[in-house]
Amino acid sequence: MSSIFVAAADYLFGNFTTFIQLLKEHIFMVVVAETAAIAVAVPVGIIATRNETFKGYALQIGNIFHTIPPLAVIALVFPIIGIGMRAGIFAMWIYGLLPILLNTITGIEQVEDDILRAARGVGMTDNQMLRKVQLPLAMPIIFAGIRTSAVINVGNAYLAFFIGAGGLGDWVITGIKLFNNPQILAGAIPGALLAITLDISLGAIENRLGDTSDTEGGAPDVAA
Image 1 (tube, rainbow, N blue to C red):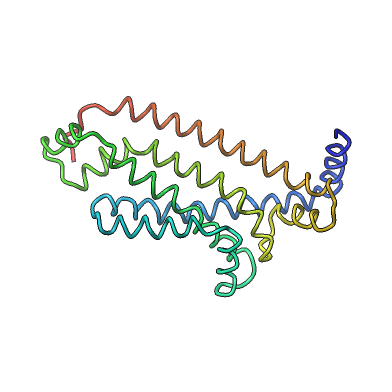
Image 2 (cartoon, rainbow, N blue to C red):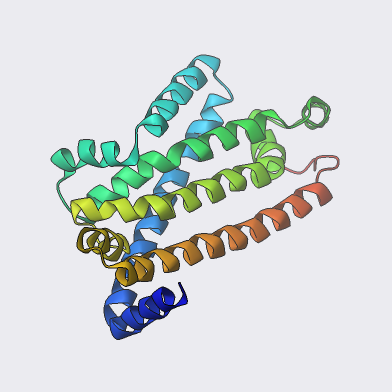
């Protein structure tokens, strides 16, 4: 067993320039897809907490997107967008929306009524309550959704290889086709380490946000 890992390390360092390029592509796809998912899911989640009908539609669409297997999403996307990294990022964006959307809605709706009444009592408008009370208190939960979405998409980025998007899936899928175990491991292990590192790093930020929200979760500020 150890000889396989040694062979994988030899393969990786023997093709180190290619590895760095594939790793950059993998990280780039995850970062762009997550940034786009945050930009859409958080505002949609905020609107959904203010309109039950809209929330129902948003969650239904998000659930539909999330229940479609990643390969099926990729298959549906590439005839429209074409082959390449843009199609891979778009597919990952679709798959990353639901965890962020759900946690945004949950985080805002779980803010205690007593806190909201206190904010209303000192004269805050709805927008002020959202900006100064609800979002800060909901931020740890929202960030937990971002963390989940990002880790999921580290894995989904491997499948983007099928539409020519690059990434570490290049080595893994090619290695499977060629029955080349060292090549498979050379692509799979860095991806697993990337997911673990990302999870730990985002988890630390999430904990910091939780500590901050607990500290600042007292009476709302009267200032506009």
